[in-house]
Length: 414
Image 1 (cartoon, rainbow, N blue to C red):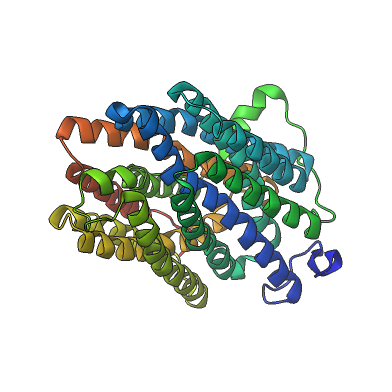
Image 2 (cartoon, rainbow, N blue to C red; image 1 turned 180 degrees about the vertical axis):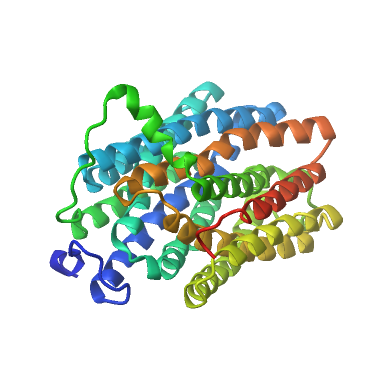
């Protein structure tokens, strides 16, 4: 595969051309590596490291580390998106963010106190969101509106692929944390090198015009004044908050709430549950994305999948067993995969201005990262105050159902 084969013309070509297929393959690799880091490190290695440092206070410490680090994710994603719009380039931000993340993961692998773990994870969250902001902007940059459901579905396969690979790698290296962190750093760095080597920045893309400093903040958040974008933002935020309030504590849930089969450790259980969830997620990502294009309908897919995500949170409450978790993982994967694939396509269709795509997608990513600031604190408070993980599942389900309702006011997309 040559550089020329992957270089796009100024106007996007149909998504089924060899050039677009090559672009989609590289984006799939780039997004998969990112989600491998988020899932493998965030859901397995980080909780394992914290539990080894302070087992008595692991729930509270994970809540603080997760919440504070998500502030960095929330801030750096839209800022990096705006800066990449302003420079008119994506590749320097992709490569720079990935290499800086490698350095952050290497630092995290060498520390032995809760404070330094928190600092290290903040660095990783900040730099990974620089990488994410630039990668996310490629779809609205290059893919025609009529094909964004299919494109988003293909890119959405990064979650089941990257999530599964990340959790499996992390479960195998949980006893050797330094090795695990370095492996994840190498994965994201290699993915960035591949993408930036074979996919050059869009020719003819003009940098965003300079804005006076006093107007930058207002311009930065101007997308939220747009009715449909605002409701898409709210729906995404509620869905993500409900999801991560539970997923962020899954390792502890398996150890403290679920009756696992004899001899099955929580990390090993995650290595089984994650492929189950990701397989159903991959199925619903593809089917939902393709059907939403074919029928030119987005809202019904997004709303129903968010509602399903809320309902299935009751399964581990009714049946806190290994079988219950298997059922929950499969159904939750179906719901979340369809939601993320079609909601991403929906959002690209309600962006206020094409020339501000990366900035506005960065603002939308506040709806991804922002709830992750709140989620660890919410989860820690619910578990501590209400005495267990069953109330946490119920709170997560209620938030997802509210996310389904928030889709209804969107007007410009069916």
